[in-house]
Length: 398
Image (cartoon, rainbow, N blue to C red; front, side, top):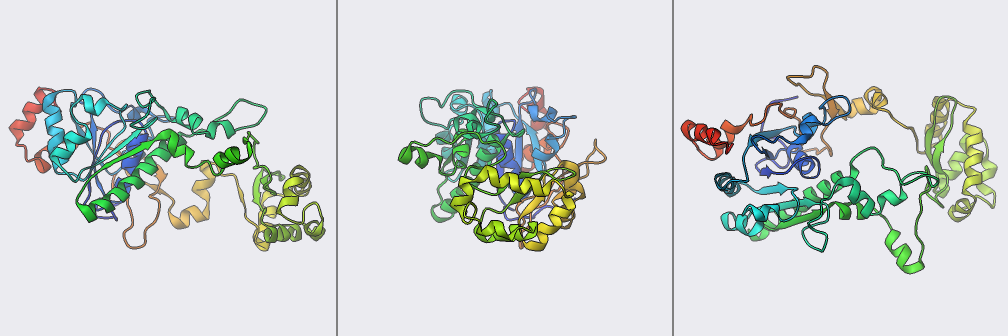
């Protein structure tokens, strides 16, 4: 990718990223992807554990730390706290995902930072939020997914609740934190005032829970795990073919009619059991069996060809290999190769969303050495000379 700077819709913003793992750093990644100068802070002798995460090696760090400038800073000592305040004075946004109360313990709460820079936007991501009786509890994404209701609905009804294999709770909270920061920036443009953005993991999950709350308060209904389909939404499921399952979604009346034509069964569209959305929902299992009995005798390419010909949404269930070989992925460069000093075949998901006038970019993968940008940040932004920087290193402040 390009080494150029000065790109993206967030060009000109300076962001300080504290904390570790996913919820805070993914928020920083989203901003860095779109041109913000994100300064990633790690303790001098305690690196972010993300540097070691990944299924077959530490391959998550190059993604979540891409485009970030990495510095070291000891926030547990007063000199380190003072240096952070100097950085805050020169910055727009600070992201942190420590347990609530930690920043205040270090004298770095919002009121202290606001006194240094009234326009600072403090983005706080935590398991339970900054208020409430459970605010100080340790919170991970998996716990937030459970508390937010997602885990209860995930998996087969005959088995315990499952997870989808990704830390979706952390990523949702981080995405809402980024959204909140942009709204706070808009407010600052109008008033000059910064503010706190408080993103709780469980609330990020809760925001995705559709109508489960009013369904219970109005009718007493509690959704349960249903496996591969959504109750009363038919047909929309995984269906077998000669070489693997496909997803077909044809629950809308007009689309269902086109599916029936594709199957050579136009009679199904006028069958009283399937004639409308409600009727199909009441006879969901039977309808799924009818479609499966048809699809299992065809190859996936044959089914997909018929679905495309008749305008019915359908698709393969992609593995990573499928993604890399798919023409749509290639045409949009959804996955891109990034240069790295350690890995010679490093591919990763590209920037999303795509902006027509101010596109994002990946200028570099997450750097392997802690403190790689210490001289640039302390010497450039804070104007410390070489002797001062050397002294900070000796004193283990940076």
